[in-house]
Length: 202
Image (cartoon, rainbow, N blue to C red; front, side):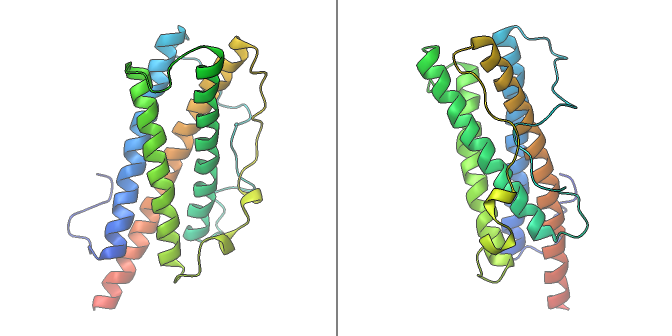
């Protein structure tokens, strides 16, 4: 696994960050598989992409901003992923209500989607707990207001099946983007915490 050598310190905080990195990687793999299954189900071309267009979920400013601490970057990702989860829940509800698709069905697409939903909830819980530990129990909210974290265009005419299908395709691409970006940011946090623990043990 990228940068997570067994020789690194393995205290409670570094173990928690390592698990968060692994979970983000697993969800990203699931999201890539989910997009693949969705394209197959809807007969969408494999090269169809919304890259370059506006994201359904974006953050104020840049998550690569050097003026932000790693904890602040993780918080931005937490907010973005929470919005992604809300939109995924909306998409599941739309399919159930408008298309009569069982959100808890046993097809590959439904199974993978439920896994993404459940694991994303676990990742949100984990990242918030990590931030509270990193910030010395202050809580994570002081890192930035929620309303600054999630911006973007998420309105769509749910009565238009084709528009909703394209919207869903964009949502899945956003999930892939944000879970991969979160994995990278959590990996940086993991290395920082491991380095701090190593210094404390000297």
